Length: 84
Image 1 (cartoon, helix red, strand yellow):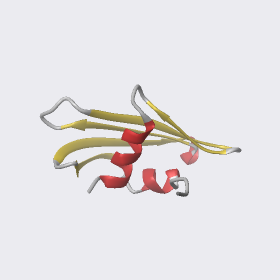
Image 2: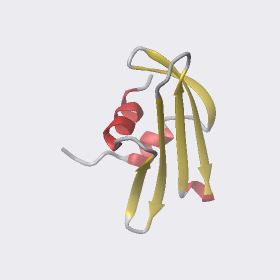
Image 3: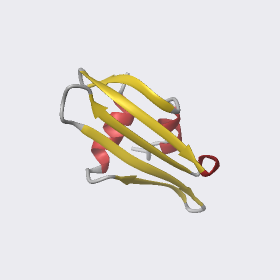
Image 4: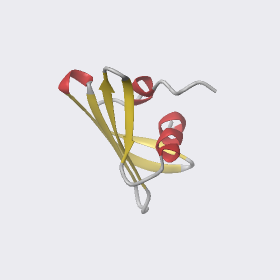
C-alpha cells in the first residue's frame, strides 16, 4: 500500500471552520494554513459529543510530516480520508 498524499488530504478541507460528517457523527472542523502552506493544522470536534481529531502537517525538505496531537496517526488518517 502506498503512503497517503498528506497535503491532498489536508487540502480536501476548506480553510477556516466547516461542518462535516464522519462515522455517522457531525464534526466542526477548523483548518488553518500558515507559512505559505508549509504548516497546516486540523482540529475537529464532534458536535454534541466528546470525540476530537487533531493534527499538524509540516511540509519539510524531506517530505510531508504528520504530527497527530495526542492520538494515533491512523485515527487522523481515517478522519482525513473518510469525512464527508
